[in-house]
Length: 274
Image 1 (tube, rainbow, N blue to C red):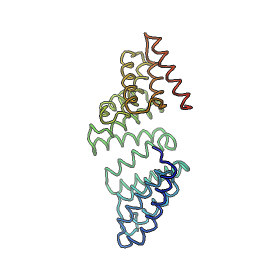
Image 2: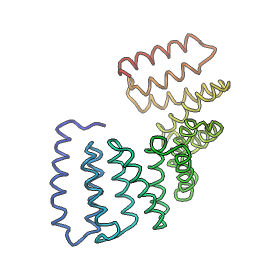
Image 3: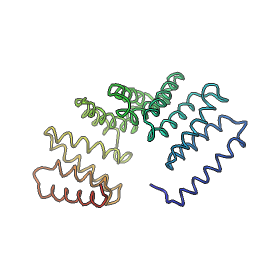
Image 4: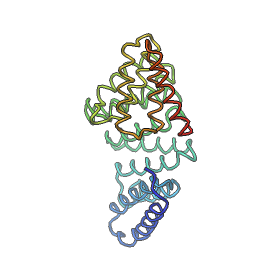
């Protein structure tokens, strides 16, 4: 949710005050100081201050990176990733370089969890935009393998990765991989733990099944996705309209109901200026 202007100003003021005291109060605790630099940078990023996030990422790297007061590979990866996310909106190319540094640092320290964080973020953010198709697929494949190893085969995080990988596979014309990836994703995205992520995977698979003549399976998937979104979101949320539009498009044999769903989807989209 977006904070009210007064709340945002208060949060920024608190961050500024805390940041000013770090160097003085924690001068003899560099590891703690670096950790707080990263925490504050994440908070700035959440408030839309990507420039400040990058500044604090660099300060953290000055402490935990090579030659710093408290070198630490895992903490350095966190700082590289913060810097990457902060740079992404304004300079995707530089962000991609920072992601590559995060990946290299994680590899050098043999930290599979940090490498998972780096490869996942790299694939999700700069994959397909800066990286070429082969590099993007390779990033997803390694992230999936790492997630299985680090978090287990039934992890919702793995489900989200597989669903995102399916979208990439479709965009790079690896169409034969899309359906298996989405089905694997759904098996790891239970409705009670990851309802919104499940709804997204259901809609994508529903559209694919409908396009390949498997409408009987496509329809209940779209219906489940809409039901999940109605539970989670406000009635006029544009994402409910998107689910209604998909449902209308895959419904066959009941044109009146499909028309009603399409009209409701259009009304929601117009109200949301979507």
